[in-house]
Image (tube, rainbow, N blue to C red; front, side):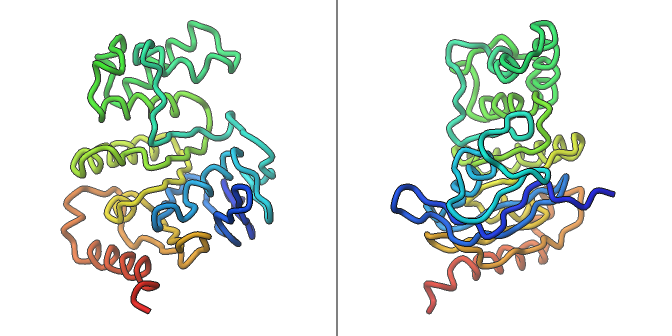
Length: 254
């Protein structure tokens, strides 16, 4: 059995110029684990995600992916889905997914076949030729997810991917994504402002303080899998979200 973390942050501090975004972050993410980062707006959650993806260097400490120190972007190991979907408006859904493989040495035929499979996996196999302007917000989000899944990367970094969607659509897509990721054995680090979303999707939740972000607590989610939306009516679900609320707002009560 491989006990090596898929992702590890050890004493990591992050800055933008003279502004300290995060201080002394330390946590691991196991292979196949779904870990969410929650905290106030602007606290450094996305900065931590960017550090894992090699887009923001650590000033102090070390970030590792699969046991190797992160020194820059690693597209073979890590895929991103941002809140800003960055879909090309002049490309069809299929070609937006294909672009993830365009510079990976994959033949045109293989790119097309894998993109078709990825769209089918997210429930969009019947709309490959539609352009982003012809798709709903939820469908556009699924195209972005398909683009992330089409690569062989084992680690998926999701930065508030469902923030622009209503709560019902958000949780429905989140549940579909969770099933898909479990089938593929992906490791996920997920940034969200929604406590319900974090509780419903995650194995563990990293609770972060206001900027500069430090880790206030790491909560293991005591809910069995597979999960169904009816779980959100359960007392243990509400106990968990109440605990998360208390952790987030305890600074304001002092």
